[in-house]
Length: 90
Image 1 (cartoon, helix red, strand yellow):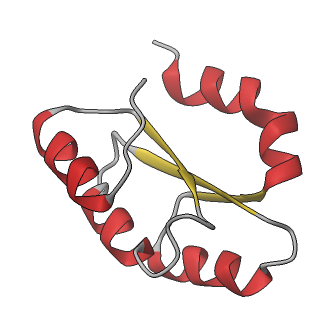
Image 2 (cartoon, rainbow, N blue to C red; image 1 turned 60 degrees about the vertical axis):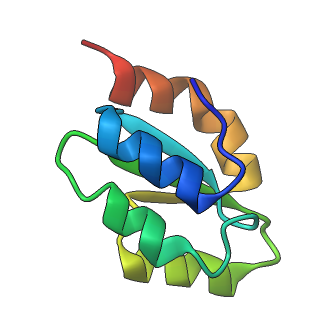
């Protein structure tokens, strides 16, 4: 697991590795969602984004640009174990 402070760091790593899942705090990535989705367009890598429930417009944008799974922060926390099992098994 790695945490990236900005899109440039993430882009560099995305080119070098084959992650199966990328977890994105959509509130922190606002304005950069298309870039994140574009870097991970692959059947092998899914992007799971979570957002503050008061920011529904951001959730709609994430869905529009192709983020694989978009969840409110509460749903993300409650489903995290299942998400990791689903995408990281095998």
